[in-house]
Image 1 (spheres, helix red, strand yellow):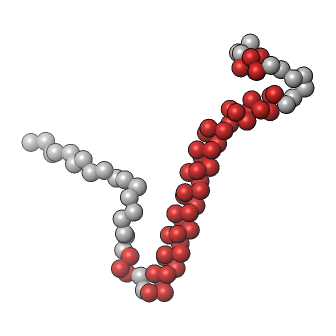
Image 2 (image 1 turned 135 degrees about the vertical axis):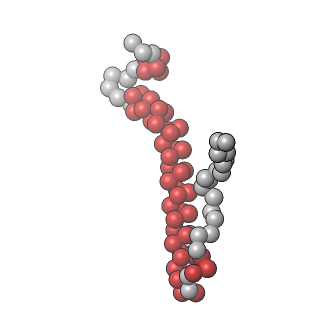
Image 3 (image 1 turned 90 degrees about the vertical axis):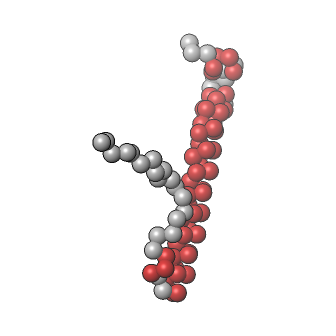
Length: 79
């Protein structure tokens, strides 16, 4: 018979990995590292969203402030 494939999901969950093996002083250092890592991930995700939605409007604003001043229709038309 064929082996049945397991459907385990490898998510980005925050499962504890060996946290019981740390000593109390390592625990606070590990906690500080986790807070720093979480803050970094949060800020990078926010920066990614801001860049994604702000890039085209930024290009339009830069185009509107250039010489000669084009109309918005000329900036958005492909020709």
